[in-house]
Image (tube, rainbow, N blue to C red; front, side, top):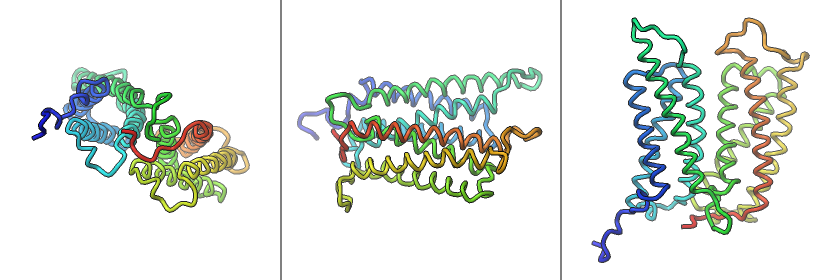
Amino acid sequence: MDSQGGHYLNKAAVLSPLGAARMLQLLLGCTIIALVAHSAGYNHAYGIYCMFVWCFCFAMTLLVFTMDVTRLPCCMPISWDNLTVAFAMLATLMYVAASVVYPVYFLRSQCSKSDGGCEVRNYRIAVTVCSSFCCFAYAAEVFLTRAKPGHVVGYMATMSGMLKVVQAFVACIIFGALANGSEYNRHIPTHYCVVVYSLCFSITVVVIAVTVSGKASALPLRFPFDRFVIIYTFLATLLYLSAALVWPIFSFDRKYGTPGRPDGCPWENCPWDSKLVVAVFTHVNMVLYFSDLIYSQRIRFVSHSAA
């Protein structure tokens, strides 16, 4: 036993604003899973995605909360602060997506009282409301753990680090649209765009993984890891700029594609819609990488937890 007593459990992990945010996340996450499993229901790819988001985030939050309470992160060979803020940012984005997708595909304004349809609708409304509130709970954690002026923190707590998570998430949306009948294999230049998306996504994930591992300083590079990150961000900005020019031309120009949405194109499986999603989020990621490049000039990379 510790002679001072009471040091095996971390009371601050429960009694602090950060602890309150995590307990709220657990409460809302458990409520959502129970409502969906009881009556709200889920099916098809979109429903499975939403259920995965809620279960994954609940499990990860429970793990993070338990680890913080029991002070186990000090025994792990990773940068715990970087890991938790990266997960909080990812969970916020995933919850936002689920809170939009679930009501769009599962919530209807009209219902039939005779077969219990109104009860199911009410459960789905409750799921949507709880999921929306949980977005704010995870966003509150991001706000509480973000980098503050004058404080030394891990890279993932900076604006540049958080933007890395958003970039990877947006790339996943692009990949989903590409896989949903985008017809990207019809032209060589659109293949180039797919290579750009894949390359930038892969390196961004590697940067996040190396940062979370806390081993950035151990990499066999001829220059500091922070310089590598800035150089990569600059190149990624240029690559996304080229993709933002190439993809719309070979998707919507009359010579290669269709400027407007074809009549009779199915609502849930229209190649033109997928091409539009790719075009929009390509521009979104281009702006994110450019913003990341600007913020990268104002910080110095921290390869280990500040704690």
